[in-house]
Image (cartoon, rainbow, N blue to C red; front, side, top):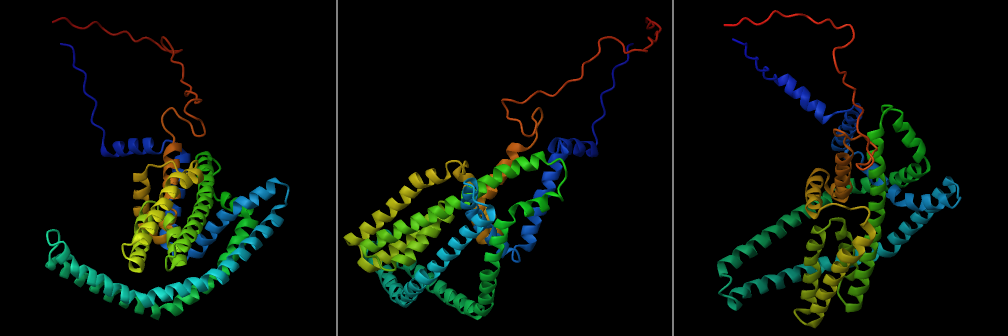
Amino acid sequence: MPTQPHPDPAPSLTQVVQRFLRRLFPTPQAVALTLLLVAGFLAVVMLADMLMPVFAALVIAYLLEGPVSAMERRGVPRLAAVMLVFVAFMALLLFTVIALLPLLYQQLAQLAQQLPNMVTQGLALLERLPELYPEFISQQQIDALIATIRQEFILLGQRLLTYSYASVVNLIAIVVYVILVPLLVFFFLKDKDRILAWFKQYLPKDIHLTAQVWRNVDAQIGNYIRGKVIEILIVFGVSFLTFSLLGLNYALLLSVLVGLSVIIPYIGATVVTFPVLIVAYFQWGLSDPFWYVTIAYFVIQALDGMVLVPILFSEVVNLHPVAIIVAILFFGGLWGFWGVFFAIPLATLVEAVLSAWPREGRYVGQSKKGRKPPRQRKRRHGPPPGHKEISRPPAATP
């Protein structure tokens, strides 16, 4: 009888892992990019506290690179452009510190003095809710809520006391930041090409994939930081003008909070809504000025989300809102404030890596429309040269 063909043996675990790694890392460029990303991630995780001045300087350098590059394109030498932009930035920063910080501190001190009175009025209002709406809320629920609020205020006082003990250490850190960050910003701008060349000499020679990802992410991070700073300033200015015209107390302090809230998309605006409405309520109750402030605040948020953000970030942020929220939660949990601030650029980095990752039939640096199929080796028809046919005896008949 004719012999049955033997089935191929099942691949071992080692072979399965090898096939998976070949598919996951099909080229040496993919391996090099992975090692760079892992090394950068570990450096940030392990050295985050020590590198905070560097991160702050990088953010400011990205912010100032746009004006410096614009002046270079108009024929200004880079060193002169860096000096002009840096001096203008430091003068603006000094003016902000001298003009706004005293007023901001004054309003913060006034709010701290009025806070106990506001809390007392708020608790009295809560105690009246069971009488006004007995079908919706009971006295037991109000008592539990009031006990929770009082406990939170006790914990807040303990945290503030602990923070006051550590104020000396924080003051030293602030002094270090004030000295180091401007120096780092200046040298990042002045020696940008030299710093990049120094890093490049330690990279592999074939870095087309890494270069492609870097070009995409570098442009998007710079545009994102500049757009975010412009958005903060515009939202702050419009909020301060609106709150001042409406006569809202602590207009500067609340405007700063509203401006900084745009750093955290979706979540920041929701959180800042509460202090704005609480201050307006304790100032006017539910009278007409309260509703004017409420309507004006929501109009500002709507214009920011539907007009300002599309104009500033139309070519930068191309991510789904769910991806943005997940990135904020993930990177914010890892690195706190800086993780929240860079959540969208880091999510953009992930998307750029996934888009540029080499796949079957696709080469790095080629678009999907213009890619060329890989060359196939021509299969020979017939036996190869020098092949000798081996005669086989006829099969035996049963």
